Length: 126
Image 1: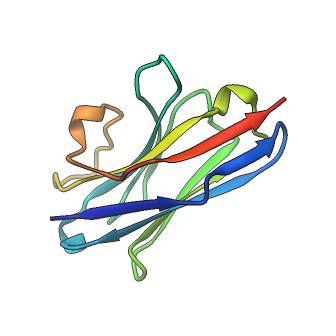
Image 2: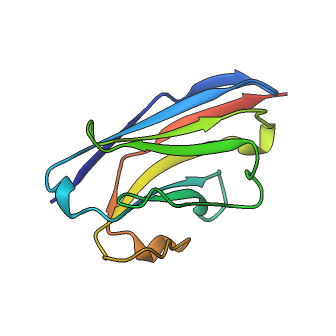
Image 3: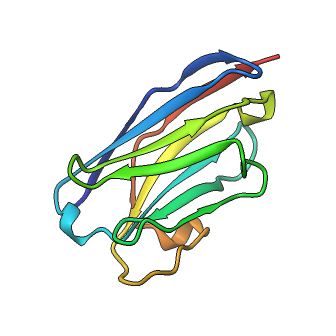
């Protein structure tokens, strides 16, 4: 059983930067992919970025490409999301997710990930 705990959210001005962290524990040896999703009030949860835990390949939503960077530290069982050039529309609860399905492909679908953190709020003011 994998447990995920996010941290690093908060209030930031437009144009600023925030770094989110996700600590994974319990059965991390079985993880193949980790991802960040976000959910704004009244909207569905959407894909932000993902990384293949073994190969380091990444995938980004078009709305964050070039502004956000996902990375991982396999020795510390940590995943990070560096968020630069923030926009008010980036305001959401950000969730860390993990998947144990073997392979190099990286899904952008919420139902492809079986473990989720509790979320951390990021608010961007204009």
